[in-house]
Length: 242
Image (tube, rainbow, N blue to C red; front, side, top):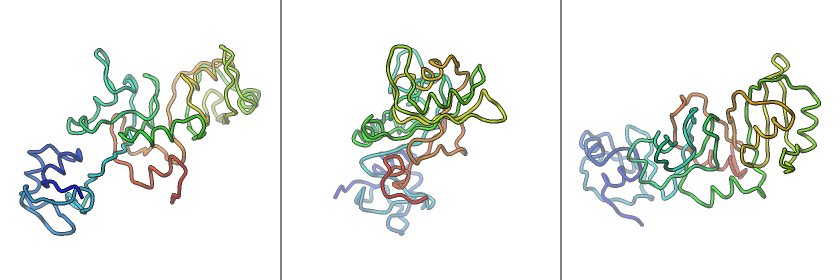
């Protein structure tokens, strides 16, 4: 059991600052195991108690998982002295959780990026041996054809001689410069390099899914939400519900 003050548990969860947590508790908006608690010093089990704020569960677990809709122009890194990183998009209370990106998206690539402090999950989601699918939407400067789709299925050879695993290229029949690519690995700038190997140059690139987890399109660029256990399991293809 991990017994702590209620205001500390809420603060450590990233749901509020310490002073905000005290105000929430005093106003009667916090419940522990279904009972309203108004004493910020009330001590309870951080992981064994059901704590809610306005009916919304507080995640006080050791590991945290966030879905971020990464905007353009932000680095997939934990810190940088000169440029804005994805962690800079989070409220201050989240920055002490030890979060880091699961894989990377290029600075100008947008879409689904998972942030976590769970190293084992990160390894499972990014290990080349696991073959976790990643789905991207792209627009190119050039039109594509079925010869490109066939080459992707056979395994693209990059300009440096690297052989990629077979991938699926779906071309939009109404716009031959637009489509979707599903890859099973995460080499450096892989999707852009695969298209470049076919003489096609990317204009925009957005990641839509990792494993069975799709980007929540209700999230505005730069916004995030906590992932549920079922969401997390979708990434590593465990027992999931649709």
